[in-house]
Image (cartoon, rainbow, N blue to C red; front, side, top):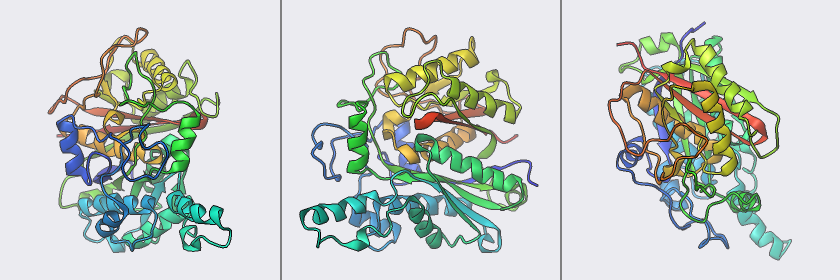
Length: 401
């Protein structure tokens, strides 16, 4: 049994970059990926800004290596997961017990929507090949095949906490000596279904979002994928380069409050953060930075902030929401933010909370406004709190000197 789980590789694609280096450069230079809708075909094209990946489907196909016609969700997944695999540099990958635990919420919905445009106009029309990869699990299988992973493949779909739960599951598989290496995280592409659904909930912002600001109006959707390569102690000892950090704590909790709203007193958020701290053997004062869930909605930010106040008062860590850069990428968000958090733990990065202006009156803390490098960080907390009260927190810890 491996007592420690290490983060050996990272990979990401989002609205701020097509790989980890590009995303980090955008974070360092306060360059958001939110803009007018360009690629998604929707009647809301001029209404809601989003953070699209800056490539069309043909360009994504070329970058991913998939044949044209595969869902955008799968192409984003393969690009980021392959980067995480290659970044780890595991020499004997094929001889190890490997797994791919991937999260998403829309599956191949983008291609299904293409089918229904023709089908609704004429029930005898519509390309059936556009619906064969509709299921969330099919996206995972397509990517696992390309990565050469056969031992263990699973898909998790728990709304905004999906990728965090995938990472937790991967860590447990390693800790219990079932697998040696797990590529874990998630992916999601923008679809009309998603945009229309969030519009129906009336929580979209028609301006650029302002997470944790007193005058916040809602969230901006985004798309992308983020994965980390988790390895056991035995595999970590044989790596050619040092791992980024360890995944020292994690917890999933549920407040069972509402289908789409977080509890006002932050019960689920409090339990998730507290459970992750307990697992890691840390105290609240040990956390140096929190990558906030921070969607920019009234409910989410109030709930998360109330839980942070309850758990950390009177000593609050530095904190920010990187969704101010990437938008809310739903099933991919915790995977993307896991990459950012692993880099924070390794290099002492604290990211800015873009467009923050006014502190929330009931919060005795405020998010960071500027990028900080080489901060004295030992432990980074990453929050992902989703629909159905499904709340998850991850803790990434710096390697001993």
